[in-house]
Image (cartoon, rainbow, N blue to C red; front, side, top):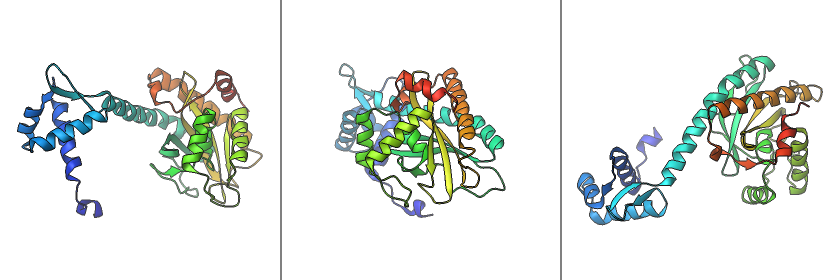
Length: 279
């Protein structure tokens, strides 16, 4: 109800109207044509077009003076399509893993230095894990996040940690860059990450990266449960099953031709081989 009562931003609303008109045109539209169709002041339309052009969403054909979609919109569309393909393609794998283990399964991507959940499967009759689609999680204290950033180049990792920080959730949270980097090195070595009550007390999670066929991390999947469900004794076997699922998902995505432009971090070929090994 609050969203319905919130006033829209007029300039943004007008900019979106321009984009929708251009989307319906086959050869683009000129400034006079857009002014005529929107019935907006010429100066306002021109300012909006220039702004969209500077940001890469539109470009102006100098010969015809027509505005057309720029590559920025194409890039955004590709990212949206890739995210939908990734989520849809992963669902059967997540459900199978959930039924097999009796644990909650997650799929996440890296966005704005955080792990963002884009899919979740939760078994009935178990303690509910406090996660939801769209939830943003810290990368330094979650298994999904560690799996996403463990294979990043050193400069990229430093930038992520600098911009996001290392907020403390409880006494188990790694708040030291040095210790976190040592932990991430172990993630690469064994091919999986563990959140040992670092994000939330009483909960333990195992996460593994999902690689593209070019050896890039495009997502991560995890198993989540209580400390009674995920123990030191069963972590190796659960991690092995999780890595098998991630590898199968990677192969399935390759067959669907998921654009490699959606990749998050590059992983050297040697590390990609480590990730595919069983524990």
